[in-house]
Length: 124
Figure (cartoon, rainbow, N blue to C red):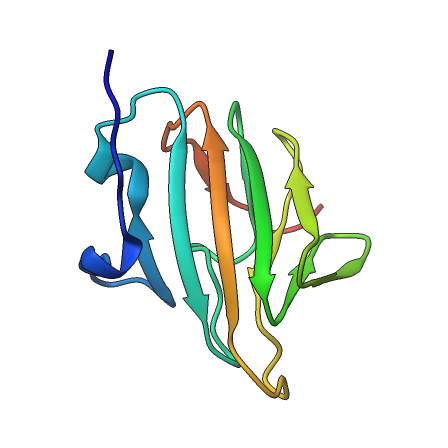
């Protein structure tokens, strides 16, 4: 059996990201799910590649505070504090905080399986 207590504030943010991201799952040695925390300031986004999709990974964002905007090819979703946004495999999306937002968003991100299978989406 294995147990871990991880305080994200004790983790160094990952370098070269468009917003502040801390890898909780890496610190806990998790292999079946990716768990990250994000602090996304107005004008910043979560993904490295803008609008993107995953082949296998299901991705979930839980907004702990603030408001997250998620752009898809068909709609712009507004995800408020206490709400989840779920992107199924093959579903293009880009999560960000609007330029004119009054505050940053604190977001918990989950992805399973934890594979690097993201692809840029250029539209069809």
